[in-house]
Every structure is written in structure tokens, then in C-alpha cells.
Image (cartoon, rainbow, N blue to C red; front, side, top):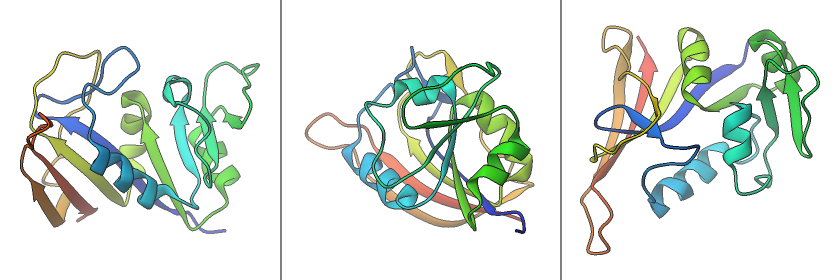
Length: 163
């Protein structure tokens, strides 16, 4: 099989934060719906900490977990040690890389597409990533949403493809 199309899917605050103590620093139901829609039926590649942060196994998707611990296993997880193993195991035309920060950095040079939620907040956090380099990426779609009366921040859904 040829190399699959690799999509990074992430939500990132204005200051680069993507997480705090294994959790997201905001709650955006529309972002969770978009995540489900983008990942449904596709293998997801993630790090062990991201897998551990999930509320449960996400139905309709495979959970391929990149980990250094060769003995680690968990129900619903398909552990692998390398990017190459993850892509081979996925054996699909499209794979979704869902985090965390270290996994994003590993896959960024291989990624074809980024599905980014830009969140208009600057929270504290212990996991952060740089904004994708505009020299490498082209924004092809953007959908802006204002802050709402429930106190949720403004956010934008942004789709980027490699130049």
C-alpha cells in the first residue's frame, strides 16, 4: 500500500497551548462534533498520554498508540513503537494524527493536511505547539465563530494543505 494521506487534527489556543494536565483547557462542543466527523471510520494515531486522556474508546475509529513502552497495552489500543509501524498498521488511505504535542512534532514533516481549531484564549498549559509555518502550509478553508453567551471563546476551524 502507498503511504496514506496524513492529517493532523488539533485545537490550539492563541498562545500555542493544546493541553493542561492531560486535558484540553477549554470546552467547545462544536469542536468535539467536528473532531468526531473528521475521524469517524478512520484510524487515529496518538501518543499514550492522549489515549489515556480519552473518556473512553471512541466508537467507529481505531486507536493506534505510539509508545516507547513495548510492554504497554490497554483495551482498545493498538500499540506501536515507530511512525512506520503506526502507518503500516493503519493500512488505510487516510490516517488522523490526534496528539499530543510530541506526536504532532513527529508527524508534521509527513503531514499532508492540518485540520486546526484556533481558540481565542491564552490559557496556561503544559503542552504547546508552534503555529504551522506559513512557508510550508496554505490555508484553504476558514470558518470563524464568535464567543457565545455561554462564555465559550471565539474560535475558527482552519484547513491547511502542504504547499
